[in-house]
Image 1 (cartoon, rainbow, N blue to C red):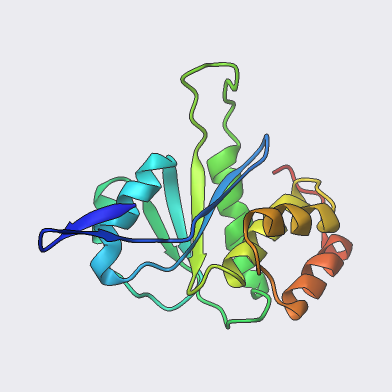
Image 2 (image 1 turned 180 degrees about the horizontal axis):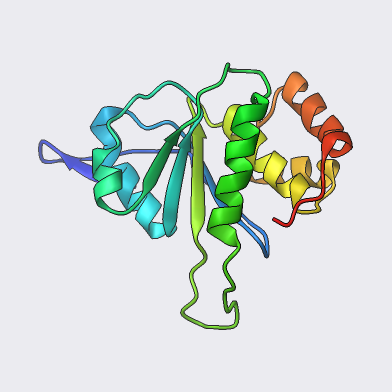
Amino acid sequence: VSTQSTGTKMSIHFEESLIRTPKFSFLITKGPSKECVKAYLRLLQEHNVVAVVRTCEPSYPTSLLEEHGITVYDWDFPDGRAPPKSIIVKWIRLLQDTYDELTDDNDPDFKPKTIAVHCVAGLGRAPLLVGIALIRSGMTPVKAVELIRSKRKGALNNAQLKYLLKYKNSKKTCNI
């Protein structure tokens, strides 16, 4: 993504990672600054993002995204840790609400809905939520971590990795 700034071309990198499965489409990014919201919106629109989950303190206004039909959820939780149960419940509800519709993947014009998730650097909290979704949809914890790390180098610290590897034990039947 690039933008014009005082006549010179300035490159803006959100370090985005697209993770797609037959069921889901996620865009993990680092958090944008308030100066980059327009460029961030263009990136979100490119990927058909319908919701943004902020897992860190707000660093930009949400009004522009919301004006373009993108819902922003503020689900901040401490860096380096697992999310509280209340956020996991909201996350699962968002997944169900977003992805439970029947879609025709054989349609050449089909563009999957995407949920963007970010924290400050996009390496801990955001990939952790994506990992939870992948595991709850039937992927093994190891495969979920491998997929996330193949798309996002440096993702997940040791505590978060251990959490995901144990998450399968707390998984309840889920239709997402």
